[in-house]
Image (cartoon, rainbow, N blue to C red):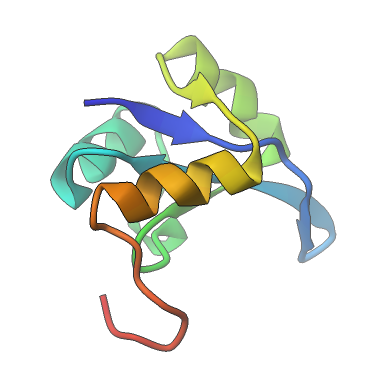
Length: 88
């Protein structure tokens, strides 16, 4: 029952991005994302893309900071990891 976020180190669209995941369910992730104002379009199958200027909002709301490898490990262990190209 934890939301995790990695550092904003992923470039795209002229910004840096983080990934935010749940270790419980996609529903928990959607609820948390809505709470911090992430739009539904930021959802990418098993995670939310969070711009660097919203990173602190996620952490302040309770997301746990982890490295990218740890984030993927926890997502996979929860059974929520979706391989690229696989529908959500």
